[in-house]
Length: 86
Image (cartoon, rainbow, N blue to C red):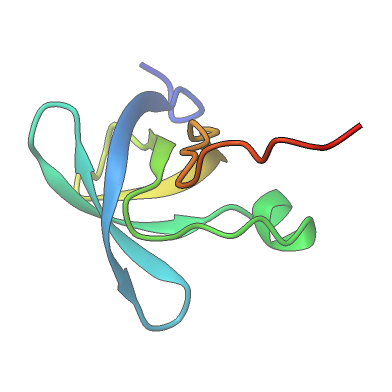
């Protein structure tokens, strides 16, 4: 692997930390420290606890990563639709 090769994994944000860092639990149950990528900050994409994310990691340090993508979540409807009168 060259140093430009990045490992992409998916996980869930379990904790928000100061300085725009996050603790992420990967799908293989490993917890890492991650930060939001510059494009996410530029476009003001919010990452919250419970969000599903894609993380890029360097093969040299497998304890830290960069969040590249926040996966869309399914909409949960809390109330039934309102019937309209015609």
